Amino acid sequence: MEFRQLEYFLAVVEQQGVNRAAQHLHIAQASLSQSIRQLERELGVPLFHRTGRNLVLSPAGQLLVEPARTVLADVLAARDIMRAARDLQVGAITVGTMPEMSSEAVAAWSWSFTRMHPGIRLDLLEFTDAAQLCEEVASGNCELGFTTFPVPLAGLKAVELAEQRLLLVLPPGTDIDPSESFSLTRLDDVALIASSSAQRENNIVTTTLRRETAVPRIVAQVPNRHAQLTLVLDGIGGAFLPLRMATGAARSGAVVVETRPELRTPFGIIHRPEALGPAAQSFVIETKATLDRWNSRIAALRKEGASLLEAAMQADDELHDHRRRTAPATIFGEDGVRM
Image 1 (cartoon, rainbow, N blue to C red):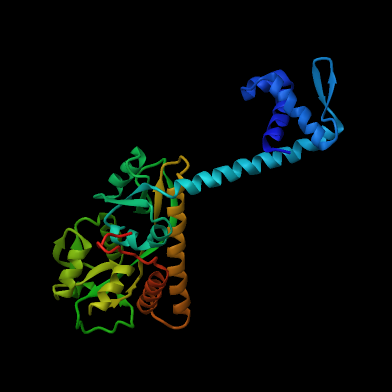
Image 2: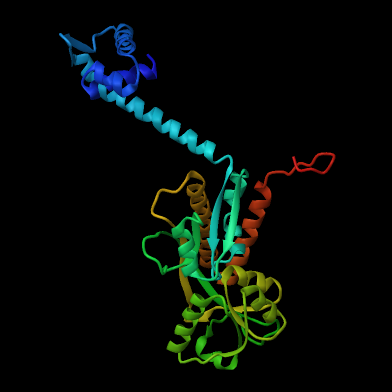
């Protein structure tokens, strides 16, 4: 029994006749009739009763319909899976980011995808704000976009990944106990460095400070977070930075404290409502899995008594070790060309 014989059998059933089935399949009627007769000989039972020019399913034929449909569906599903696997061998996906979701962070979260699919080129683009990012995704210039929520454009599909936590990062040597949460009402005495590009994040901070009746003293406004961190490490003032960046700041000697109340915002991936391609689907799945592992490890370490910063730093170290152990070896030829 061959797959094509079952396909022809179902075509006769669904088209209610050999002639219409042959037209549907774009084959000769004689070839279709011959295939059905061959299938009947192999099974040893008649599948149709022939009454003049009409065919009527026999009891055996009726029993074969559902199994044949199952086999046909399974084969088609297997073909789709293999096609998707082939599509994941080469190609490119374009991912947009915004100031609050920097390309550096996205690159760190997507390491699992890039390791599993080295033939897929990842193109990261940075846009000025969430509105521009949403427009680029809606127009199809970006297949995916990383943004904080809510988004300012309706009609896009959102996949929430996690919450971004902001911590207060202060210059090295600041006389403050990092084990205690810092009340935002005390910010009147703290010099702050703001990022002019992270408008949505600034709005969250400003709204919270207003509620806490705190009036920060802005001593510098810079274009991005890396400039913020540079000035913090130079002792100019403090800054609100996301947890991932705060861990790096702490390793460089900065004093990092949690705030009271906490500053957090949900973030995730947006895309057009149409179904994603195989590469983009895999990117979303792998990125979410990486973030879930990181956040789950942080939660477990905090249950053991670690602070948020300590837990994040240990989770980062473990993730880095895992990457190093699982990274494929890079082989170079005698001429130094990567092979």
